[in-house]
Image (cartoon, rainbow, N blue to C red; front, top):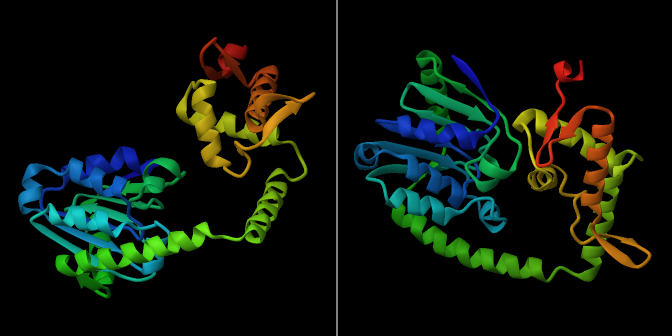
Length: 284
């Protein structure tokens, strides 16, 4: 049985809760939000006797860029009776397997972005034969990596913590020239995104997508969702200024324009609180 999985955060807790003997996780990037979610949903029985196998990429650059939180892995492993952390460079597979009954294959890492911020996609497999094959493939691949014992992981956390601080200090000293070049590149990216058109046209497509996916939403709920999809367009440092007066963030005015255009075209409507898709039957 295959189940389409648009959101890891809604399905992963159920998979973790269902694990009785073994939980296998392959995630190149991992964050505190992810390890906390896993531990929070493990049964007491599993915490005492279950086997956690965690395959990840602990490369220093991943830690410096905050893609991976080694201390989060250390904290999770130290709370379990049986756990194994394996380091495998250039790992890209994101797979979550509970015993031999359920597996999730997804684009989402066990991180804040993968769970809550990014738009990810995947499938959940519940056919025992297929789950067994998935598990054996990941275990075989993981055997190419290096098992990291808890004392070694603890020491590594100290080493990379110092490295991460130096990396952050270096990033904070980015030159004015570099920042200017970054701004030019960002502006060029915006031009590519808009294709010479208006920002509200992009937002109109996004609002239509969000309302069809999530159902009715308020403007206040739409704003952060739109900003997650189009961060380069949603610049909170740019205000709309008319005759010297500031009228709020420019991109939010573009969202408002998009809403009004969609409403005028009969695609969406507003009930005084929420925006919603106008159904074909209601148009008739």
